[in-house]
Structures are given as structure tokens and as C-alpha cells.
Image 1 (cartoon, rainbow, N blue to C red):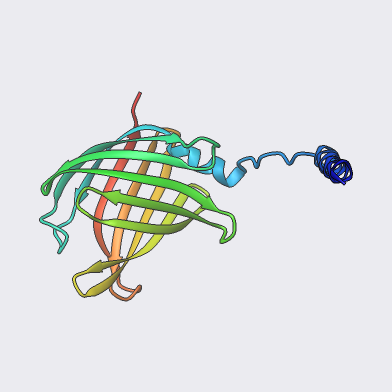
Image 2: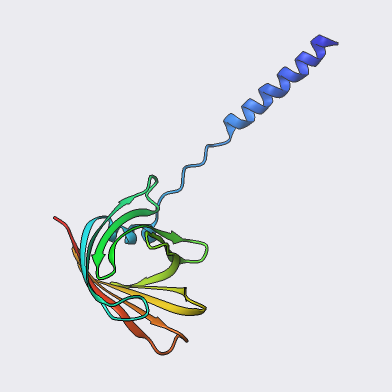
Amino acid sequence: MAKRTLAVALATALLGAAGAAAQAPSAPPKPGPEHEKIGFFAGRWTFDAEMKPSPFGPGGKVTGSETCEWFPGGFQLTCRSESKGAMGEGKGMGIWAYDPAEKVYTYYALESSGHAFLSKGKVEGDTWTWKNDMKMGDKTLQSLFTIKQISADVYTFKWETSPDGTAWATMEEGKGTRAK
């Protein structure tokens, strides 16, 4: 009886191994053209901006830098930033990605000020448009962030908010330059 049980177990194991060997291993997924587009932001950047006086702060000049690099696999960029302005110094961390299920770009950010947000966006030609909702006290504001690629090493950006999605107020405008 033991020999028969051993023979059945051995035959089952061999058939399972043969079946697994016969199945072709699937190739790992590869980044597509949508992922390659976020590659524009890979590298080290410096930026200068003008923050407008608003409930977010007094306004004034903002300077900083950001370094973005590919996460292993080539599907996302991870970024770390530092900035200085009228409200002091800040640090941030962000992740650029593409969501093929929703067919949108995503940007998730954490800031040393305690803010965290997820934006969803699209790119048309040389212009990226990002939207999210943000809390300001007990109110929700819509946020619109636009990036325009000027060249391989320069982009401009504008951040706007609106209480209703129709009347937009500019909060910040600036320029990013790839560090050499």
C-alpha cells in the first residue's frame, strides 16, 4: 500500500512539473509610450516661482530644486524636492505614474507642511493638465496645475484654484530648468 501511495504521489508530482515546464513563462510587462512621456521630468531640476498672496500664505518668491528618477521597472518616477519662500523651507516627495485602467496620469505628493494629495491628469502635445480637490478649512477647492514643456530642458507652470470649477484664481506661476 505504501509503494502504491508513493507511486501515485510521484506520478502526480512529475505530471505537475511537466505541465509547469510546458507552459511558457509570461514575459514581464514593459513600459509603454505613456510611461515614456513622464520621462521628460527625469533628472535634476531647479525652479523659480511667484506665489500670489492668498489664504495659503503671504505670497512672494519661491525657489527650489527637484530630483526625479525612474523607479525600478520603468513605470513610475519618484521625486524629492526642496523649496524656500515667504513661508519658510519645505520638502516634498512625489510619484509620477500612468494608470492604464483609467487612461490618466497620476501624481501623488507628500509635503513637509503636512499636505498630501493625489492629482489626475492628461498630456496633450506639450501641455500637462492636472486636477485635484483640496480642503481649505471646511471648504473644498478645485485645483488645476498646468505644465507647458518649452524645450527639452525648460518648462513653465501655473497653479490655479476655484471654489466652483468656473472662476479660477492664479496661486503660483513659475519656470523649471533642468540642471546641467
